[in-house]
Length: 242
Image (cartoon, rainbow, N blue to C red; front, side, top):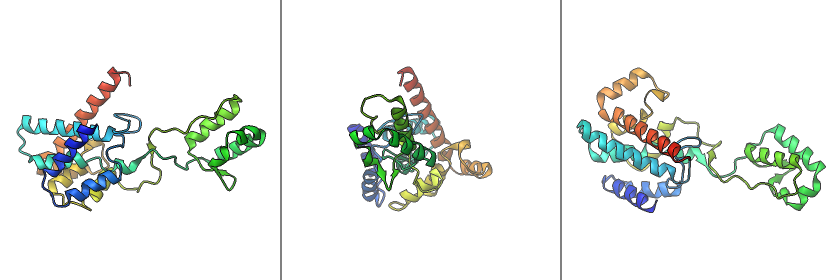
């Protein structure tokens, strides 16, 4: 992972973009190198986003050469490196306060009937103003623990990745462009490629996407590279039993 990160940073620096150093500092700050590529699918593990990004970049460079599309290397690096930037904000390892009112009421009733367990295991650390401040997933774990009545320690808080309930309600591609352009200037071809990198699965007008594809080969090739990389990642995980 260390070598992959160094290679990623080296490639971005070689684009010669003004503001690239500040952008790299920002990526470090928002945990780009630790975030997963997804929650339920490909590379849903710590560091998965960086690995997926490098996979997309490799496929993109290969396609550009095979098809002789003539896309400048620096544009490929920028587009591949930043197309999934929004995932840094979409995913979190922090416990979200998403417990439902029904779960809270049920947990409180379980606590009343099992005060010894509640006190012995210090579950008050999860309570504020008589309300549990935990995720709905951990609430389910605690409810099951109370109901099972086992004289064992309560389950640990899940440390896997989850969706960030507080994420800005902005389209995936648009958020990536918004954050990137705070530090560097993106060319028109970069903006269009990132905007439509999800291809027909994105929430955009098909006529506009087709027009973008006519303007720049980047639009189709970034989507294709992303699709190939993702499919390879899924197959690899299936074959390895992950």
